[in-house]
Image 1 (cartoon, rainbow, N blue to C red):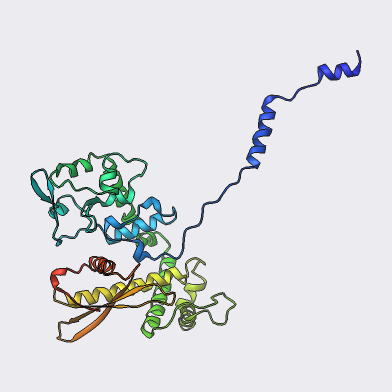
Image 2 (image 1 turned 90 degrees about the vertical axis):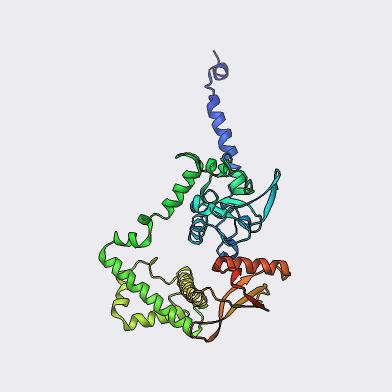
Length: 362
């Protein structure tokens, strides 16, 4: 028998599975994987976090890395419940029906009302409802809003039983705000030395921010690296305090991790926001329920984005006339309707009432 015959008939064949594996590997090699884009950093939270539920974006529209932050910011603001609003009526059957503000008390802290759409929404379902489960009132209480004012039982049906989608979303809200997850509780679980060092660094950061805010100085520098001769006012003042305070110097070197120095731009903004909230709270407390004058003026920034500077003029409890700046509102255009909408949103955020009869000046 010739060797050619033996080679022809007795040669081992490759199994089909091996060919399939080879083809599969070849196909996988030709597949292009696109990484998920990173979360945007420059976000104007004043525009993103809308108090009016009819103007909000769905939580699923945000980057996955931002959704937890968005939920926390909405939970801090709480549900939109304009109790003093003159709720408009609609014709249902042969009667005029309107929203009853007493429902805010009856159905707890989940019921919301939109002044723009004049419909009711569910706050907890907006935050944690699974968008893939659109049954049980998702369209009515999250997307389009509910306005069947004659059917109060629909609100109870939306809440449902213990394991309803609404109650699951409510439980997730409670878990997010659970005290065991708060910063102060987490600090107690750390070593006493680490906790004390953190508070020393925090006090140093607050003192630095207070000085710069009082003097009206910028915080950031062009080059904040360790080799820079001028790392910006915040870092330079912070380091200067550490040189004259042995406890702060030790907290910044021996007892601190690189990610816990409280010098990042986000930390600086958080401290500034806390100062701004305290000042704003003091102004609103000074106004109380008295009348005030509203002063509005254009304040376009260097990038030519339209902004609206808002000042409140009032008489304090000592009889002194004061003019206090309360914020800058970004506006998309300067039409009267849009400016009024921005002022209404600011009033809702500051919890000011039109019943105080504000006088306008702009």
